[in-house]
Image 1 (tube, rainbow, N blue to C red):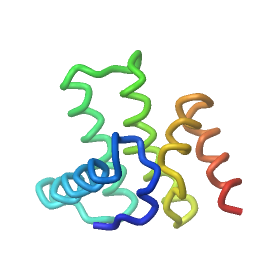
Image 2: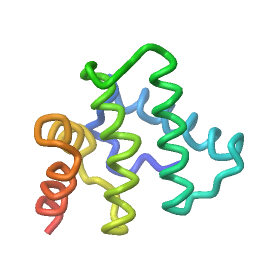
Image 3: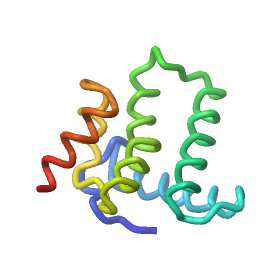
Image 4: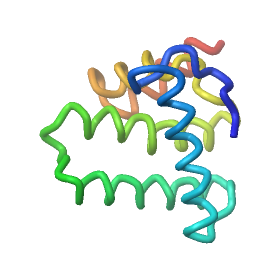
Length: 111
């Protein structure tokens, strides 16, 4: 589990972000998934379904923030082989401008 680039996060604090990352890594083991981009994407989709079963949907800001964090970061890494530099800014960009534009804006920030 890495705390790299965890200073600015979607969650309330870096500590909550680390707890989420821990649960994410445990879910890899529980689901029998490795850390390859395809398995990361499968896990992100699994997490989104659980989030939806908890009552969140596409009309909720929380759903879009979680999608940016769970799915968006997997897509970003798959394309660039880099981690998102500012998780909160990335998520806000994805919510404001859509996932594709959020990915592009993060790529521009990291040039």
